[in-house]
Image 1 (cartoon, rainbow, N blue to C red):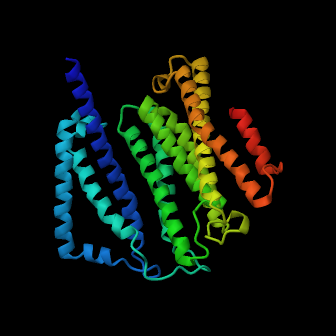
Image 2: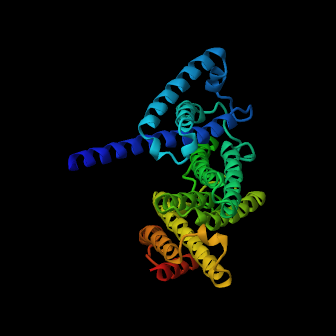
Image 3: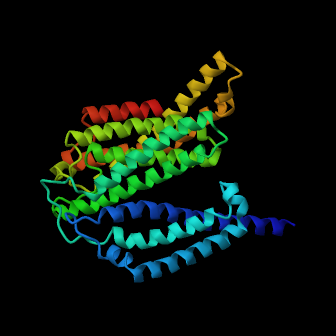
Amino acid sequence: MRATTMDSNLMESLNRGWAGLIRFGAYLGVMLGISAMAMFDKSYGTSPFLLELLSMKGLIWYGSAALLGAGLAAILGAVRPSLHEARMVTNLVPWLDGILLMIGLAFVWAAFEPAKAQINYEDQSNLVSGRVIMAMNVVFLFSAVSYIAHLFAPESFIGRLATGSAYIGGFLGGSALLLRWYESYLIDVEIGHAPVSNLYEVFILLFCVTAFVYLALERRYQARAMGAFVMTLVAAGVFFGIWLDSVGQADIKPLVPALQSYWMKIHVPLNFIGYGAFAVACGAGMAYLFRHRLEARNSQSRLLGVFPTLDQLDQLAYKSIAIGFPAFTLATILGAAWAAEAWGGYWSWDPKETWALIVWLVYG
């Protein structure tokens, strides 16, 4: 009996792994598909692969590949029907996942195929990454609105739509950063650098980290109502990013000498993993205060049935901080090492260092 249970658990784990791989491929297809189609522009350089794909031969080849992918997904879906989030479309979802998986594999080639023309440093209005970022902004704003609507219609499909759009927004943001990194080298090899050098770039990273940390907690603890607060914070950041773009802060520029270091690729992402997790904790705190006030004013409110309990929200905030604090601590230590290498001292009490210490003490 025990062996049977272990076999069942192993099979369920394998099924979850396959399901996750296919779902990841589906989102990858959406993300890279938008990126690749944006590359179809004379000013940037056309994609011969897309031209081939749109020919009759390409459509026949691609249709066959999509059917094979859908068949694989359907077989896997048959052995794991209980693992689908949308039980009413059990037979449809794996087919869509399989088709999108094959789209993802095809667009991996198309999206990152070298362009035929360099980007003009003086005019960066046609950057592919900029178009993907615009798509990310729209998707994140849609997700925030959907999460808020979910509070008033928790039994509808809106909640699943909100979660799915948050995933897509996160993957779009990650895709935009990768494309921006690639484009910086297209401008000039001497200018090329990791996309974590200015406020505009790190805000995109912050959106992605915040979304993925929240989505991991939502999936693990069934706390979808918290998304109304977390994704509203992301939406507010999106408007700030749009403003940065409007005042010319989105252009790719050469690094100042102090930032021309391998430390930047480690220190900055770790910092923003911490900040993203802290933003999720902030959203959990806002949800806690909202529920607490709602209980005091109207204990019969229908919204109380949608939110996690106060204890659960408190635990979610704690878990978010537990994710972010180690990353932020390590980033601070590495930042001190970077400062010692660049300026000859580990700590100089400048505003950034002082506020980093204050944040560390508050969350510690």
